[in-house]
Every structure is written in structure tokens, then in C-alpha cells.
Image (tube, one colour):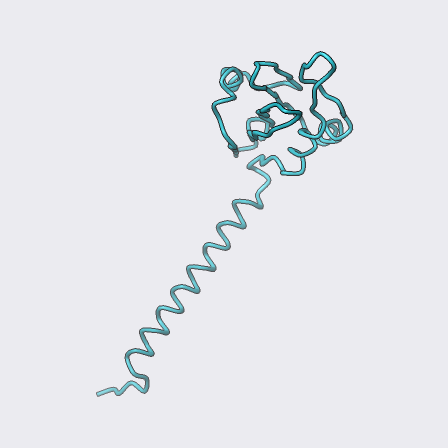
Length: 144
């Protein structure tokens, strides 16, 4: 008959600790793969900020690009498209917006902050929606 040196509560505790450690390692690997892959076409937060900072209102109260430097910087590295829509229905479009998303533009104001990422080398189909208050307007921006 074999006698265990450690009491059962220590063996169970050690088993639970090892199980949680292994689970944590798998989760870390999973999330690092998900966020680190270039196949998903994620739009970086700083690119969204450059787009938002470049958008404003002209003297007639229409949405326009008031500072294109950040937007041009993004466009020089990637194919950029975006649409901005305010509560009055004023709209600004930039780039080649995928045809599949055109029906969303008219209803963009019903969406909150959202992100759709794609894989299989289709980064042009990824987009992010942000809603901000800018120049006393509620502005919805969809960028990809």
C-alpha cells in the first residue's frame, strides 16, 4: 500500500492552482494572437483620433476636413475611407466606402461605439464607429 506524503487538501489546492495557471497561459496566448494578428484589419485608436481631429465645420455649418495632415498621413500608409454624419444629416465622405456598408450610412446615428474586424486578408472591410460631441454637434464617424 502506497502512502502519500501530502495531505489531501494540499494535493487538491495544488491541482487547482496548476489548473488556473494553465488556463491563464492559454487565455494570454489566445488574446495575444487575436490582437496581434495583421489579418484582422483593426483600425488603430490613434488613426481614429487623427480623423476626428481633421474633421470640423466650415463657415456654412457643413462638415468638412479642416486639417487634412493626419488624414493624409493615414491615407499614405493604408487605404482609408470614412464617413461622418451629424444629427442634422450633414455628411462628409472620404475615400472608397465599401458598397456593402452604404446602407448603414443613412442609419449611422443609431449606432454607438462599435468595431467590426475582418480576417482572410480583407482589411478594407474592417471599420470602427465612434460617436463624439464636436463643435456643439453630435458627430458619428465610421472609418475603415
